[in-house]
Length: 259
Image 1 (cartoon, rainbow, N blue to C red):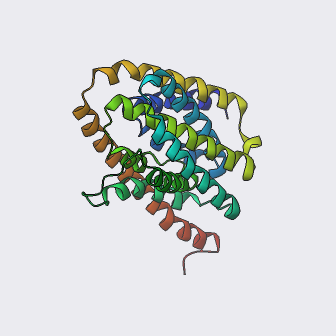
Image 2: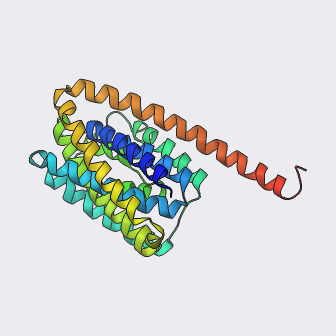
Image 3: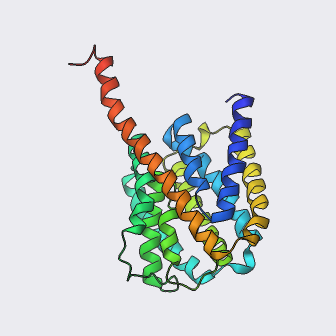
């Protein structure tokens, strides 16, 4: 990539890390969509994993006093189960499918019956959510909106939610890096300069968000999170659907014109 492109991506990573620092989500959802448009899916997944590990790891460190460790341990069990299963199939989706799944994922969480409230402190629920979220992570690059439901049944304030989720996301993105960077073997194609910029930009954006998160109320946190995720999700459904329709049309032109 050119220096200008690397600088532009660096600014985007600061902005997306800032969003994730405020809401514990959304930033990664935006970033993976941009990376999928610019580079092959496995390479985008590796860069996204490095960026999000820096963002979530730094956020977990800044809010370390608010991490709830039992839900993190429960989630890790499910993540290990998912990695073992996906390592057998080594499935990598195409871009239109990944984008559609990115858009659908937030709405999956809202389809749960209102009387079902997950308990983050229960091992079996953490394993189930960890397995499903990790599976989505390996298909789409993110699982944050669905992971939010993991905390609905617990007594979590916005600081505990952001801190604990950051730790779970650190585990998820590290697992994604192992899958795409090791098992799928795409790490060599990643520009080390871009990777370094990604790490620094993510830490900067996360740090800038801390003071604003402190000033927000829990009600503002929930309201803005829902609006932001819905807007982004609808965009990816539209974009992924358009790519899925466009691909057969372009293929027909490549063969000599539409029949």
